[in-house]
Length: 208
Image 1 (tube, helix red, strand yellow):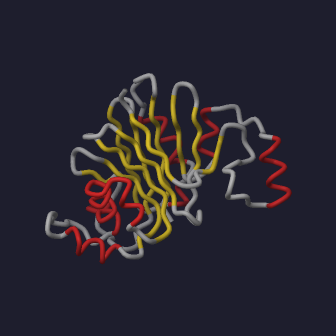
Image 2: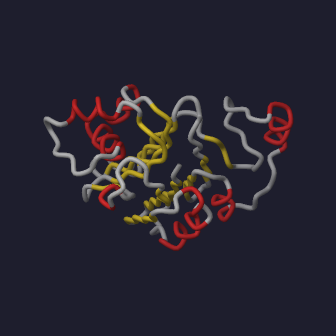
Image 3: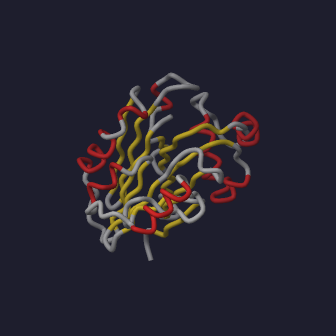
């Protein structure tokens, strides 16, 4: 279990590392082994890491090759098979599934989602395409919550970090869903107005 967080400023206002630091500070329990923050202009990504597969610092996140950036929570079950497909074009520097997912997204873009099997939630920033991809496994094992305002997009592995950026007003429909079904994965509603549970994947073009 790791924790991811991020901000995209739609107004091109630079993302402040302090905002990401605050979000990650509320998720230390998800990843006590390492913390990482990356910002570039209007985009910022952060990660709290729980080391499992590759214990080296080379596998710390945000994971980047100097251009694209990935923050990832979960486990890709078939990462060894995918790695064998990609090894002709890339020399891998870690033994973790994070790097495999990173390269798969570079090569196959959203098509990588049809190839990976596992439980996951991630955000992938493509510098070349100027896009931000947020995705979560279809079953919803790994949580991913999104808050979108007129000025910015915020996302996190938990709801609590998002409440810094809006009032925390309850959503009556979300409350009704909770007490009726306890966990309704289909419509993405949560207890809080404006905060939704990601139900598949979203791709944002960061430049028009």
